[in-house]
Image (tube, rainbow, N blue to C red; front, top):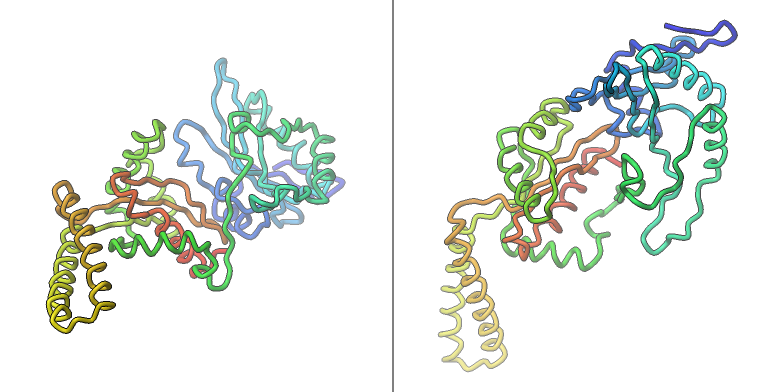
Amino acid sequence: MEGSVKMSYQFSDYIQKEEHDSFVKGHPLCNLLQSSWGSVKENWDNKIVGVYDDGKLVASSLVLIKPLPLHFTMMYIPRGPILDYKNEKLVSYYFKALNKWAKKHKCLFIKFDPAIIIRDFTLDQQDVPYIDSMQTIMDILSKNGAIHKGFTMNIKDTIQARFQANVYAKEDFMKSLPRHTQRLMKDATKRDVKITRVGMDRIQDFADVVALTEQRKHVNLRNQDYFYRLMDIYKEDCYLFLAEVDIASTLNRLYKEKEVNDQELREIQDKKAPKKLRRLQDIEKSLEKDIHEFEQFSKEYPSKTVIAGVLSIRFGDTLEMLYAGMNSNFKKFMPQYYLYPSIMEYAFNEGCK
C-alpha cells in the first residue's frame, strides 16, 4: 500500500473481488464492465486497484492490462474508475497513485471511459442539455492529466459505445409499451411462441441462433465457449432466455379449431344467419392460411425449435442485454418483440431498475 501523510487516503492494489463488486454495485456509477469480470478477457491480465479513506473503500476500479512489445503494457479501465468525480481531492489522489502504480508495469498509457450519463433523452427529445456538473467533472479530470477524446459521433472512435438504449422500471410495464409493440407481441402469442429462462444445458441452442444472426448480418459475435464462461462466472445473475415454437403442437391445435369451425359452418348454413356465417367464413380463411404456413414449417422443423434468444447479465440493479440471436425464417413470428419486453418485465420483477 502507498499512502499520504497529509490525508487519510491509501492506494491499494490488493482489493478483493468481493469487496470491489459490493462497492461497485452500491455506487451510482455501477456498471457491469466494472464487475470483477476480468477472467472473461483471456488475452488480458487484470488487477483491481482503489483508494481507502480511513479503512473505507471510496474508489475502486478493474484495470485490464494488455502486454505490448518490449515488455511494455497498456491499461484500460472499462466504464470506470468508480469514484466521486466531483471530489477533486479524491480524483487527484487516485490518478496520481494510479500513474505511479502503472509505471511499475511499464505502462505507456491508460484509457478509461466512466459511465457518467451526461444526457438522458428519448429520440424525440434530442435537445436535452448536458448535466450541470459535466464541465466541473471535465475540468477536474483535465487538471489531473486526462485528455478527453471529445463527444464523438462515430462508433469506431471509442472503445465502448457512447450511446445506450435504456428501459426503466415502471408500474404496469407491459401496458406502457407502444400499441405497435403490443400488437406484434400478440402476433407472437397467436403463433404459440413460448418464452423460457433456461440454464447452461441450453447454451448450444442459444449459440446456434447467434450463429444464424452472424451469418445474416456478416458480423462476428461470440461462440458457445464464451457464453458458457459467462454463465459459469455470473451464475444466477446470468439470464438466458429462449423463444421456442412447437410446430407439430400448433398444427394439431389448428386442425382441431378447423374441425370445430367446419362443424359450426355446416350448422349455420342450415339456419341461415348471414352475420355469423360471414364471421365463420373469415375464421375458416384465417385457419386455412395458418395451417398452410405451419405445414410448410413442419417439413423443416418437425419438433420443438428455438427461434430466438437473449443472454443478459444482472449487476447491481441493472440488467445488461448483451447478446441476441434469431432464426430469420421465423421473422413473421415476431419473437424479438415478445422476447425483449418479457425479459425486461422479468428483470423488473426481480428488483432491477
